[in-house]
Length: 240
Image 1 (cartoon, rainbow, N blue to C red):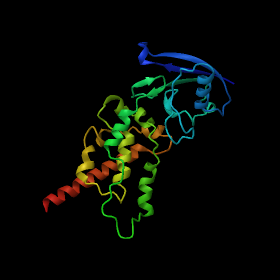
Image 2: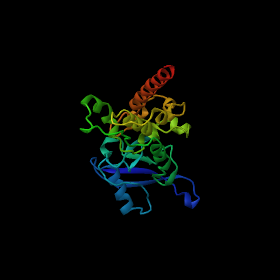
Image 3: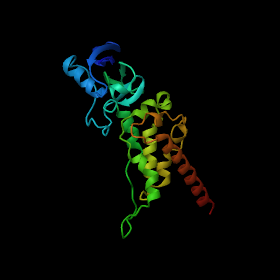
Image 4: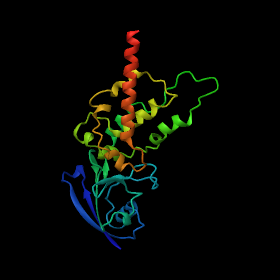
């Protein structure tokens, strides 16, 4: 079958504005968008820019807007889009480097600020033991591949550059909910602001687009509960 790819092209170094360019590609419904893009670049236009690496929905680097929805190109099959015309655009809410490649530095900067690692105290004599129920709380958020789809779909990110985004906040919950983590409340509660954990509109677009079913909005809600519990404990200590 013949598919039409309408791809938004933009190269800031040329001084020209963004424009759509159409490409025709022969493929079957089991071909992924990434495979079709690779064929277009190899056979029709070697200047087409897009990211990819693992091709198995693990690295998250091939995220882009496919027919207006943030998706991974490697896991989106042509037969699943319901139309033989696909509109491909870079992820929204990011600056464009070239064509479908965006600048992910603000996304990763927000991620680095939440200190995404376990900060243990003195290890117990027999090592750490985590119960199944405790692991169930954090396991979904371990699966995040940092593709940026939730960040791109978030309406708060699009209007407020101070908001760290769903991925960063959900990942923070993953660590502070880990029983091995001993970071002080006063440090991680820096997100206890109207532009932090309380900035989320709770419209669940991040949950809808996540390719790994992480449900970042659920993590943000859980983070808010931990913030409230931490503030209560802090007030009670002050009253003693």
